[in-house]
Length: 201
Image (cartoon, helix red, strand yellow):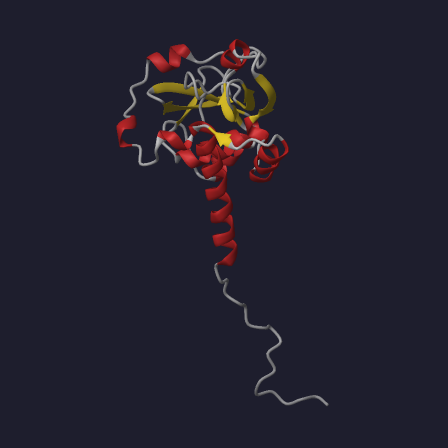
């Protein structure tokens, strides 16, 4: 499970988790940190991977990149010991590059080569295959509806394992929200219950 950590001598926080056997750092925006605080998550406490995924998809948690100007807290990582073997949530629920398993700046891409398919690639893999990449969308912006329209507009029928996994994740989130909406809620009794009282008119 991810672990919330605080930078040394800084007010900023970050989250560490394991993806594809690697420890990955996610920087948190102030909004992302506030959402974790509202969920009663404190530093050094593991928290559900689904929460980190939700922050990632909303742009409130992000991996380091050249454009962000932030570097991974290597000194903090070296001083920590983690036991990710007890993680009850599979690593596969978090998206990664289909070629190298990187998590930085992922895009949903349309690849036109010997085949025509959708995939998820990191910046390096997009650059190396730029001759075959026709369309590219930042993954956090890809909703269930946008993914469906993307595949339909581009007439893509083949979707690789990473894009399929992300589609299943979006479908599961959608189904869970509808299940929550369909749960019967208690109906509050009227404050103006006049049963047993005399009518005024």
